[in-house]
Length: 195
Image (cartoon, rainbow, N blue to C red; front, side):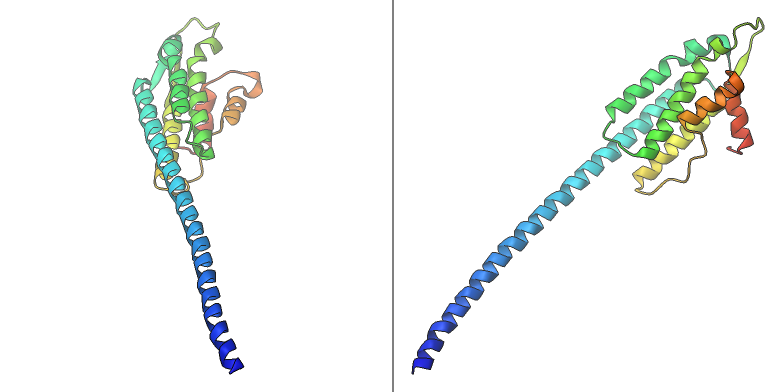
């Protein structure tokens, strides 16, 4: 009888303990699931903001590209035509600061540096009385490369390797052998078969 009584007491206690443990475990798991869901939603919201920033930056780059003369430009007009553009690009970059992709950043600053160098080309060619022109093709190449990175970012894919030089490489290219020549960028692009 004592065994039966003990069994009658232990069975409900074990069941009650099992139910209590199950409730505790369910509570822990559901808290964990809620936390994971919040983190996932937060990550998705941040990604959506980054994608919106990429689209806005792409639109700003296209707007600036519309202001870049096509083909060649007389160096005397380069500063007037191009000087405001790097500031506009930097403003667009600042407005889309949530976009923290290193490859987009690298390509953006290479484009900005290229436009800035083109706008200063008049200063590099002082001394010559005859009109001189610069070919603005490198700006188009830099824009194309930046837009490529933005498009791949929006697709959530890694972009192909950049062919256009970095900002630091541009400085080295332009000031090679102690000179100052924007045309050196054209030469570099041709030598490296960047079309």
